[in-house]
Amino acid sequence: MTQRSERDGGHAATAVLVLEDGRVFHGTPYGAEGETFGEMVFNTGMTGYQETLTDPSYHRQIVAMTAPHIGNTGVNDEDPESSRVWVAGYVVREPARVSSNWRANRSLDDYLKEHGVVGIATPGTRALTRHLRERGAMRAGIFSGEALAPVGELVERVRRSPAMEGSDLAGQVSAAEPYVIPALGEKKYTVAAVDLGIKSMTPHRMAERGCEVHVLPATATAEDILALDPDGVFFSNGPGDPATADDAVTALRGVLDAGKPFFGICFGNQIFGRALGLGTYKLRYGHRGVNQPVQDRRTGKVEISAHNHGFAVRAPLEGTFETPYGPAEVSHVNLNDDCVEGLRLIDRPAFSVQYHPEAAAGPHDSASLFDDFCRLMEEKGA
Image (cartoon, rainbow, N blue to C red):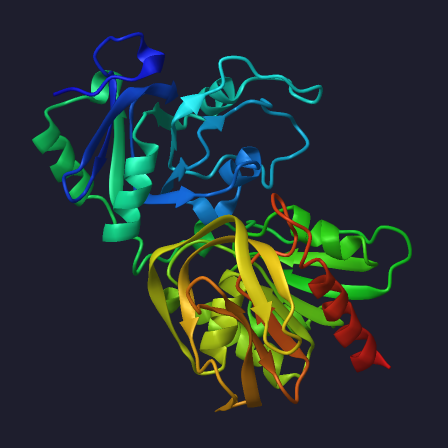
């Protein structure tokens, strides 16, 4: 029987979300109409939808928001984390009928249409989230308007779409040419930041601390990075399977060989793990939201942190382990599932975390990690 939502006034659903295992959710179009495909994931954040939409790490993913009301504060021109929307599709339960915020200049629905993002409003977001937690993230498609067809045909189209595992996507979202974010106030450090899908707030956080940030494309080699003679090197977040990022791993090994201070987040953490000789694996349904509890193993402090990742590093949680660059340790761990959330070399100035200390959107508990990076650069230059 066709499901109906409060929003469509009792009329038959005019949009469907189809999962590769055959599960179907009915609803009404939200944003653009048509069809789209991607990995189906969910985000548990109650705010920050504009930052989520423009996060390059969501490239080729359909994002379902678990918060029931989305779009209340509309959209503005200050909060995007990149120059475009990256999500492949968008799923909400109850869109705001009216957006209300002094900074807003258009509605979320209009914003999605403007960027051609196919979405759906469906009363089944809770059931969808439970399904993904039980079965794992999987391929999906949203279909509306002229793209609607018999469900069996839509399922087959979803199953023919590319999977996330084995996908090399960083190059698709990275800047094509280098650019510079100047330090705010006095320049203290030069940072080479490799853009694997960087969010705009990240170099801004470093600029606030006196860093002149030279953002380089994902194709940057160790020679390109070291040619800047940076005080430190940063590897950003980004989409795709870290097992495919061999060139980035090679570049990072060159940076570590040179002894440059290094800081990586999210995808950069996975690249760091691979550079140390560790493996990576795909999480069942990933961590996406702004409420993940992470513990610093060195101090015992617990921070609530922002996440967006479907892959993780496999490393020993207890004690140290040997790497080509000396002993290392897992510095942070997720208290929900013991996922590795940070790595640190013991005898060299290099560390990384799996989460997002730039806090856009999200809590600011972990902002001090940027201070830690600056401290390493200060000590190395002393």
